[in-house]
Length: 112
Image (cartoon, rainbow, N blue to C red; front, side):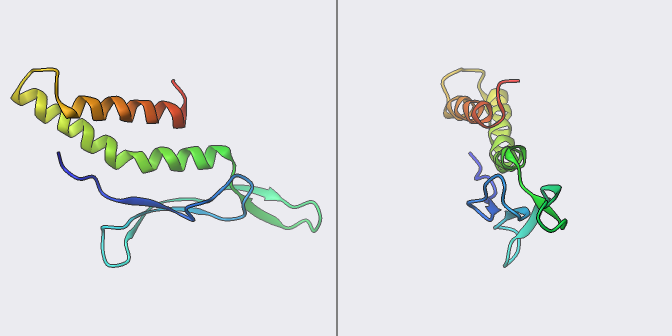
């Protein structure tokens, strides 16, 4: 099995309603990492002063969580294809990894 890239979300503890943008960073690409994705949040108006800001919502957090799973998804699917081409059997760790990943995907994004 190949190791998947280490992607992280910044800020790591972001929550819906925060006035911040989310960054997904590949920590293994270069000395300071590389930004893979920026989720800016939704443009909102603050009623108190009329100022416009960008606020995160639940969908932004869910999207970031799904994006963070992509390196593992790619690695797992690659392992499955490679394993299937070599063996054709069903008892391999890549299947357990795929099952776990599928459960995580369903938890984060719903079962659609």
